[in-house]
Length: 221
Image 1 (cartoon, one colour):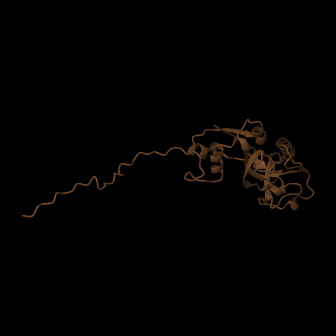
Image 2 (spheres, rainbow, N blue to C red):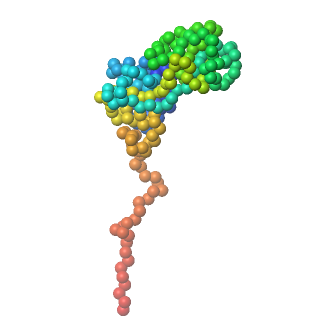
């Protein structure tokens, strides 16, 4: 049974379904604001988490790491603000002079972002964070606008898989394969559900030389 912790702001449901469809390992889903902490405490085998995170260290030393995709930067604004009405990506300079309630960093707590979004919902200021995270957390009174570049003080973020080197297993490697888009026939797959060996009705066995009957030669008179 693979225990996977996944960070707020990710929606890995399709990967989970594919993993269950193509392997027999089993899967336990653990949503978390800090999935790395669960792996560190051996409460999860694998973390789908936001990077960079200095706790991971150099890849291959204590933890393996596989980067999957980059996150677009975003800003949360009041729903009725002029920014929300534009309905398009905007450069960070458009928000010069706005009250900044939150700017995401590698050390940020997601609970602090939740608190900042309550302030934004009260029509006060803005909050910078990865756009997928903002979209998951935002309520009706908050709109999310994607940015064309990183705002000042916010580094680029990406989503990746992290697990302990000592815990590496076929179950983990199979999930990595699913997340990276490897197909069922990929040679990297460690365990696949057995395919049926039942022959179709139209697939008749081919005759061989041994099964062919030969006619006896007639003697000439």
